[in-house]
Length: 170
Length: 106
Image (cartoon, rainbow over all chains, first blue to last red):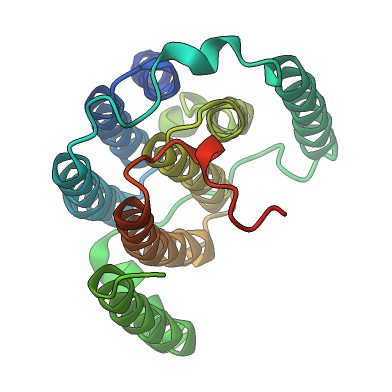
């Protein structure tokens, strides 16, 4: 049953991820990326991570993609970006070979993990696994220091973004 | 139990994650539009989140979900700073083709 939901969602994600890379206009890429994020949220729900799925929609499909669209519209990229010339760059063959190495390495590592026998039988899940209450409790007790560090990171990023976008760089 | 029998195997999630990661890497290597390169980086970060949460469910832990929450924080920070850098670059030179930025090269 879960597989019936998983395969369409996974196919959707891969198709839209390819759409991001292949699309010539940045707006089309952004739209594909939003669709991919929504598909991923579905996959997170399938993995019982409801809280993360909601965060995925709010943060990625909401905030981050609005930022992307905002910058695309602000820069008004008609004619100043790239055209279709990236398809016929002479470096593409080298890049393909490098990606091939990456694929081989990833497959080898995944097969190692799967054959190690450590992950043969799934652990049984408690009833409230992945709910906001459960994740929130752990976040504010066991992982409270990383949480605070993340808030400092976001503050620094915010200040950095304001300073970078405000001043004229020479 | 019935529900456990029907669960999607761990391998499926890992292969989906690897596929999306490779698509992101190819995007970063092949595309020259700075904004599309950033989107490809987002794809890679999301691909890692899938693996984290898949292992989480398999081992019945919450650590992976906390880590993917941190990944989202880093992604948000990275996007805001990165897009600010793109705007600053665009003010200097009205293009976002990465091949045309070679000030630091020579």
